[in-house]
Amino acid sequence: MFIFDISNILNLLLMLAATILLIFLAQELKKSYIAGIVLFAYLIILIMHVAQLVTLSDQYRDMLSVLTRCVAIDFVFVFISFFAYLWVDDLEAKKMEKKSLDNSLDWLWKNV
Image 1 (cartoon, helix red, strand yellow):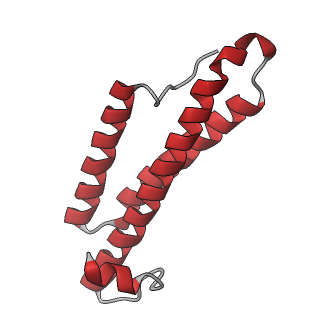
Image 2 (cartoon, rainbow, N blue to C red; image 1 turned 180 degrees about the vertical axis):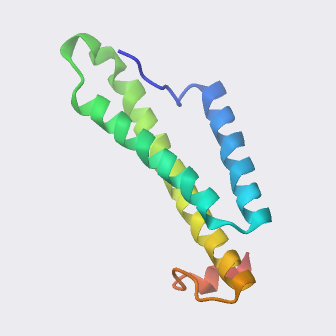
Image 3 (cartoon, rainbow, N blue to C red; image 1 turned 90 degrees about the vertical axis):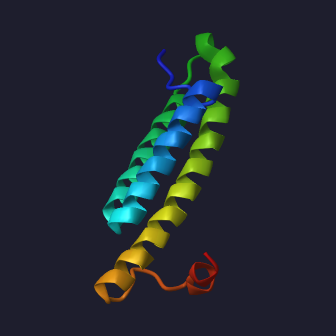
């Protein structure tokens, strides 16, 4: 069974670097769809890991701890990329002088 193991420290660092670079690119270009692509990718990876966890057969029970770590890390990356999407969307809305998708975190953006 193939598992994209992001709990491995090298994979984790590579994914973190790619996420930071893509969020920085989205912030510089002020294009929220770039951060949206990152969020969508992490949601797909989360769904893939949960599906593997649910359909795990008895012969692969030793992979249970790896999959649970991967799901936990996926949730962290989804959380980070979701807030990055909201932040870049706010930057894009201010640049285009239009209403942001969600202004409920205005108090947070003023401090960033």
